[in-house]
Image (cartoon, rainbow, N blue to C red):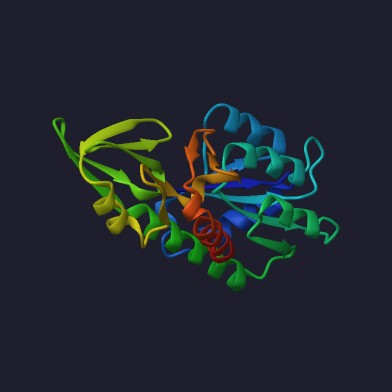
Length: 235
């Protein structure tokens, strides 16, 4: 299911957005949750709820949309944020939280639905890519977008996700070749990293979104920096 959150303190606008989303071809694949203010969404994130798309009003009484988005980004760098509001006042600030689009009310339905449909198709594409891991426990499939990095020690590869570590026998060179077209990069003789989870690079250390640190090989430094910049620009 595609999880969509609508955060708006105007019930009429919320209802209009819901009616709009129900016109999507894949409406039956979407789960819509509504929040009347930013604090409710923040509380949901604190309780480990996550969403694929946030439709966020900017002007709300308790916690405004910008502060809400800033908080969400501390938990989730990948959720698609679309700002929907009645003023251009916060347009520039909206992009500081990596908002995908900034819409002025009243929305143009066709344009809005086209954007939502594009996001959903991209989410489906990314969600369908998996890595099959064969070990003594059998065969396990892991979604590529859930893998933070892969670590090699002798002939054992350990796949690190946000919630687990799974070991398998294999060569890091073969894993590198199979993942090179999917946003992964070998940054050290012992590490392959998912570019989407890189939070910081400082000298020879890469810090990921989960605060794990990875060694960066000196001779790969420029290549990794260039690849990361290209990845960010093409997101």
